[in-house]
Image 1 (cartoon, rainbow, N blue to C red):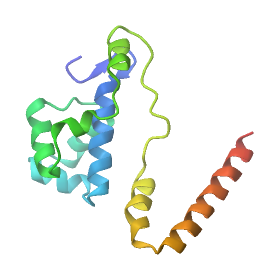
Image 2 (cartoon, one colour; image 1 turned 90 degrees about the vertical axis):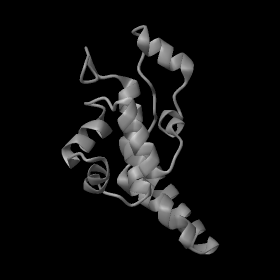
Image 3 (cartoon, one colour; image 1 turned 60 degrees about the vertical axis):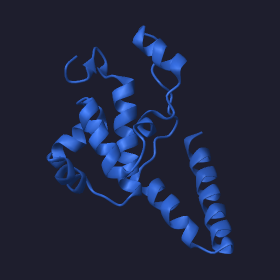
Image 4 (tube, helix red, strand yellow; image 1 turned 120 degrees about the vertical axis):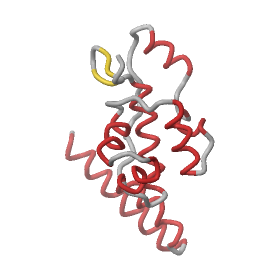
Length: 138
């Protein structure tokens, strides 16, 4: 398990931490190469971290937290202790719902720049599209 892979792929905690790194990187407007340069790594290594394929060492996670100017605990927010214990004992994996994407993060970053009226219009549009997607799947 040196590379963060168990019997069924990367450990859920490694995936969660990697996802949090990716979300924060995108929210701050950095690409994988930017983060890699700051840490002395290649963008490919950052990709592996973000997918959970390679575990992030404690010292590297510390460096990432300093680069992003966040507390190291930020990367573990959203993990439930009971869920983490269940996974360690071979229980069910984490249910993260819909993971953030580059697009959802960008929408969240841009929305506050809109007037309240335009935010409401955008919300109505997204709700309508989500409803249509739900009926398409049924």
